[in-house]
Length: 174
Image 1 (cartoon, rainbow, N blue to C red):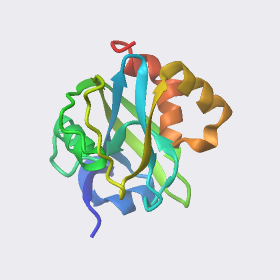
Image 2 (cartoon, rainbow, N blue to C red; image 1 turned 30 degrees about the horizontal axis):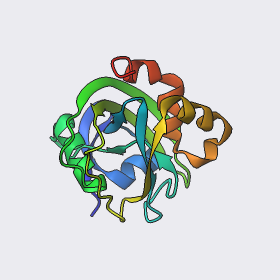
Image 3 (cartoon, one colour; image 1 turned 90 degrees about the vertical axis):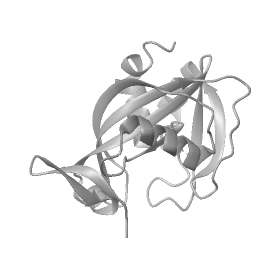
């Protein structure tokens, strides 16, 4: 059974299976994390076994909180599950909402608590191959430029974050 995530059904926050949420395009809770090393951001390439947007580059990590899970706890959990990161602290940066087609008839309509963390070269990263194919550190300005010329390499939400919410998300980081 797919995990139950918080989604709004008829205006009421309700636990709904993750796949159903995306099939119906329901507005739902999510978290996204951006780890920064100076002006570089850690990106991950999504594993090919992911049920949507496999092989595309995304922010450091993202997911949906479990029903009744605190967003900050979820961000820390997901860093560990996707990237094996246990020694990074993150801070709430902003809450954003977007709606994006993530292909194959699936829709992400998310209310996202965005977290940013600052790390150094001692950060230990051990990606989970079921979640992540590859990782890379990219200068923020280079990422913005590449998103414009090579959009198909990236998840729709990363482009939205950078195009519409960059100043809000990274106001205290850059």
